Length: 257
Image (cartoon, rainbow, N blue to C red; front, side, top):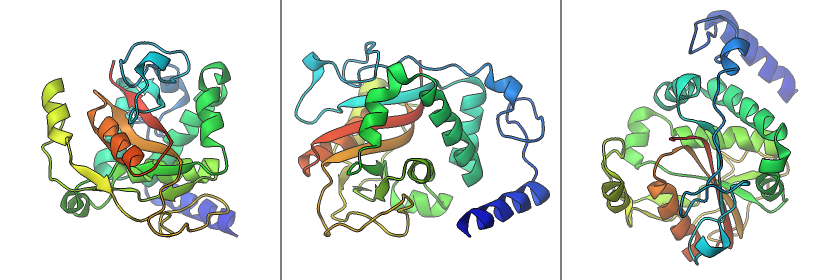
């Protein structure tokens, strides 16, 4: 029944709001087959030192009490991927997020040598998805959080539960025009543990259950759209681990290179 409803929704969207490739304008998908051939897959890096690491796992020498245990950035933030993420971020097109996540999982499935540690972590039954939150007023004004849209699509594909684990407590400046040191200072102490776990309103994975209120999952995949300097995700990871998370991987669709 649910699958039929989704097919009807997709048909209606395509009928009244036809989809065009964000790069060349060809009708049919947001990234057409031809333009997808020019997508740049990003090399994986250690989220601490940002030097190369084949599988995205944090170097042993870089590991600390509150550091990320790994980082995935599927593509380089340029070209058609950049245009697609701008569509998701500023136009809130949920089915664009759906298409992008399908392409991301396809890319990871084709390169299991690199992505198997992350996929094994993600697909473990007790791993929970969390997203980088926005300042509440900004989210209300925009109407959505793009990281939440992406997280929902990961949940649909992977079957993981989604948890609202973090809350943004400061209205920070946009990171876009800040230098690296300014980014680090800008997000410092701007997040806190939200004291709530699995949220039924956004929990889309199969077989989800609601944990006791305030209990921190031990294994978390933290989701955002883009990795630039990593300041925001590192700060969020620190909060999660201080609250009790044992392992945290970061996942972004793209990273700047």
